[in-house]
Image 1 (tube, helix red, strand yellow):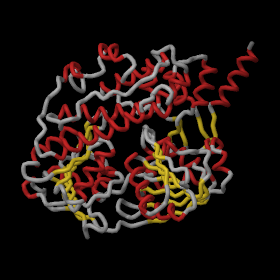
Image 2: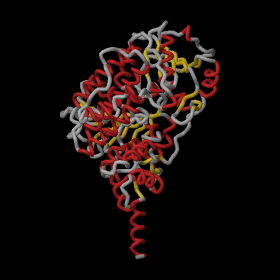
Image 3: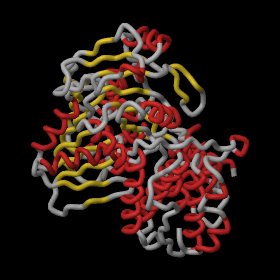
Image 4: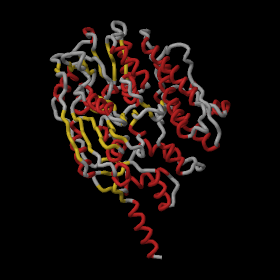
Length: 524
């Protein structure tokens, strides 16, 4: 009996030790070379990488955002290079194309390429998604790996290249236009065209729009907006249809905007846990959006109040904080199943926590403890009818649990999967008119997230989520509704939500109540 226990323990120990590079055999066969274009914002990193990609016979561009995948997909098409677009919720397949633009999580590790561009590699430090950059850097099956990112990721890339024993060339780039700090705060009354105002919440963005739309034409960009709406708002600002851009740090990555002056309205942000001061890396990344090459000779950074300006000035010239090892690695489906057998458990949350606590790796890596994934795992473990494979797949779904609309839709979809019944997409809002209140707009933004979830499931389970085309049409309608609502200079009336109920918006108008679920039966 003792010998059997020892054998079981030895087998478990072997399972809990991993040489990450060996999980990607095709990449190991290719004698890869890594080139890192490193530099600040507006130094031409991504431009140079895309130019190299376009010269390759076949290749892929991996984006941190669906918006960037879409933008560079369009760039390839505009240069007469056939391309395929793949994201978690959308596929535009060209059978004759030898180039792919995708979000980084959608990389195909079995498709050999000449060149693979991995954008914004400093995202390797992201607590929830950093694993995707780790996997891509280690496992992308291309002869030439092109990385782009900021200097604080340089040490990380050197460590990974050394672990892989692969050639690394570092190409350092300088910013094309200088950034200058303003000496005095800028009043809202004296804003110039091509000015961007930075705040850090959706509510503050809309409040500023309410205030400034009386004098200026305004575009807004914040994280809750869909990529299509963000792209349209950016276009309006880029083409001079709006004078002022009000944005959160959603503009910090990827969007090319003709900003001359960038003004911080605050130096604090709520990060999901606490309200804290901005970090140096955040200030530099956001500030770098000013002075776009080809639009302005210089970029100017400032603030709308003295306290914020003093803080930005104090921190602007500090060095970026270096990203340090270890780098997080996410559990694979195979590892989850293997641990389930050894732990004799079907509880995904338990297995994920065990993995994050006990898994060890060769090289500069550590097991990831992905809070969003564990939160969904806790929800899914309540459904005993789901297999472990189903729970693992669903724990990766794009679910915003802060939105009751999306959370309730997810539960409805899970129940439909258990019953093995088809689910049609039904829009929850009326898009015939523009939003009259902030609450109307919030519902529309959450509806786009519900559509994204439905489309994600339609790719995973096409036999059940059969309304892909209708969902895509609805996304177009809802995005247009949001665009027209934001474009209108009629001011959205603020409608406060009862905080004591801790609901995103009124339950009485939530289309995912139990009564509606029963009434609609197989529709959602």
